[in-house]
Amino acid sequence: MKRIALTLIIALLALPAVAMAKTELVVVTDAPPKAMNPHAYSSDANLSYMSNFFDGLLQRPAPDGKLSPALAVKWERLDALTWKFELRKGVKFHNGNAFNAADVKFTFERMKDPQYSKLLNIANSIASIETPDDYTVIFKNVKPVPWFAETMHQNFIVDMESSKGRDDGDYNTKPIGTGAYKLVEWVKGSYVRMAANPDYWEGAPKYQTVDIRPITEEATRFAALAGKHIYVQKPLTLTIAEGRMASDIVRANNRILQIGSQQRSTEQFHRACQLVRNGKIGKVRRIKIGLPSDPSGGNGKLVPVPKHLDYNQWLGSTAKVPYAVDRVHTDGSLRGRPGWLRQNQFTLGMITGWGSHHLDIAHWGMDTENTGPIAVNATASWPGKDSFWDVHGDYNIALTYANGVELEISHKLPNGIRFEGDDGWIWVSRGSYTATKSDPTSNKKASKVLDASNKSWLNSDLSKDDVQLHRSPSWDHHLDWFQAVKEGRSAVTSVETGHRSCSACMVSWIGMKLARPLKWDPDKEIFPDDEQAMRMTKRSMRAPWHL
Image 1 (tube, rainbow, N blue to C red):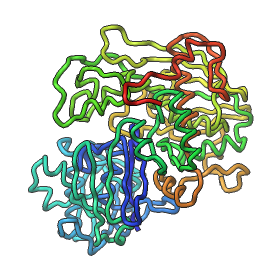
Image 2 (cartoon, rainbow, N blue to C red; image 1 turned 120 degrees about the vertical axis):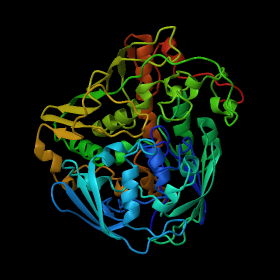
Image 3 (cartoon, helix red, strand yellow; image 1 turned 180 degrees about the vertical axis):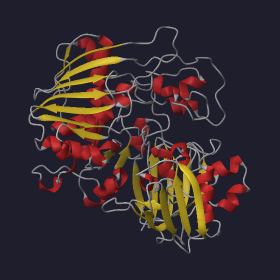
Image 4 (tube, rainbow, N blue to C red; image 1 turned 120 degrees about the horizontal axis):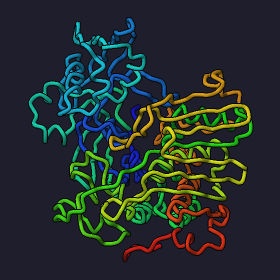
């Protein structure tokens, strides 16, 4: 049976959620959907929302996450360029229209049009689409694409008949798919309400009604979810002090909290860390992490607050400042990288935005998930007075851990993590994948997602390893959280784990700001005998918010 698919943030945000009753689920998230057009955004967050309303030709269900039938029941690669899909019969769209091959052809042809789609790479890889009958589709690629079928779980199929006759506004706000849920109501900035599709081809879903409600301010989210199990996006908090309090409260109340560090639920990162933990590269000596950087600039022109935006609530616990488009979103349409990600008032910049992902993997690989560095030496460039955006630019960071590992973080390195030991090295990254449409890319050419000095490690049998790292079911980060709640176990990225990866980034940021070597005590979470650095581990809050 199809599960509810929810993503926060998915990089930017993720979803804390709580089951309210057997037939009702309320999800609290800090990331609203950007559109109900399933092809408008390639971000994990928007695709996750869309997977409730739409289906792809294939899916990746539990328990193993293998590519499986969905709207297509069979598929095969006929030759290097040709793929054949046999479609499921008897499926209907939410409006009652029957699903067939014409809908598939229409969908992929529309995906080539930038007016409707941002999924241009896969769409433009298709040279032609043939439909010899109502339930057979044959794709011919421009050039060989061995992973073509692997993309079919998130290329969602739309209804040709209704899509042709709808204006853009209706198409972007009222989804008509074959999915497990139908949209009941979308109040932008407030909630998305869904109802179960009783005629869903895979069986009616468990939850009959689901609300997804965005709450953007951390303290409000924790208050709203007091006593509840939580899924929240990284970085967990804005300061080290907030992170310590969050971890203590969640653990004291025996709640299950999952941090949206989805790389832990991705196969190549799991394999890389398990190989390192089982000593394949010998004693770990160095770890090198490459991250992007943010540009300076931005337009600080003050304009009226949009009528639909509760700006005071949006500012949350931070200082009250005048509204500017580039303080919130760069063009007002949610399409660009949001301006708030480049304002130190709301974030520390790339070091926590991307850094908490990669530091989490570094910690997982060298078994330092519940501690942190003991020293930092960092430098960074900072925007000039004329720049509206004020987060850091390029940077170089050296962290030292008690186990002797030296960890380097730099914008100059390719985006990913390289573990180096006495007996070899292992490299892991997302490759060219981006978690959100607004994700920046490294200035380095996209590299392999997994590589090693000994290639035999890449396909070795992990089941025989002495150290077995937790594997998320179906490589699904959200499903892991749901099952953790059900089983009463810790999620793959717990609150303390998330706090430690985030606090290592914050220690790095403080080192960047002060531009001098610092000592850090990860047990007491203090900079010993350094009042200036300690003042930067917390921030004052605007009333009525407080710690």
